[in-house]
Amino acid sequence: MRPLEVQIDLHGLRPEVALGRLGQGLHAARVRGESEVLVVTGRGWGNRDQQPVLRQRVESWLQGPEGRRAGVRGFQQRAKGGALLVKLA
Image 1 (cartoon, rainbow, N blue to C red):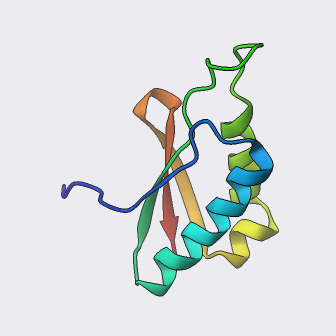
Image 2: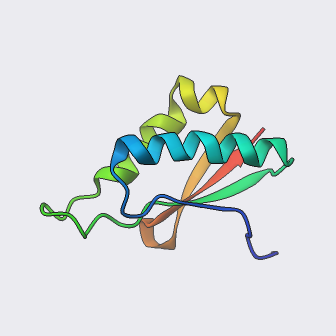
């Protein structure tokens, strides 16, 4: 398996900012003809409640209409839940 070079790092961003960056990054990846992108969310232990907030919001976005418009075919958790491998159409 080749090392994955295309990454969108959302770690540490507020959800609203992260989702905007996610949309831009996925669009750019599709324009370049990429078939998969690693989206780094972090595992969520750095917030006050120590709950994974960002990853849940990103997963919902990927599964929703925004994700479909961005060409998302599916995703899998990676890096012990700190990243998502997103498959693109």
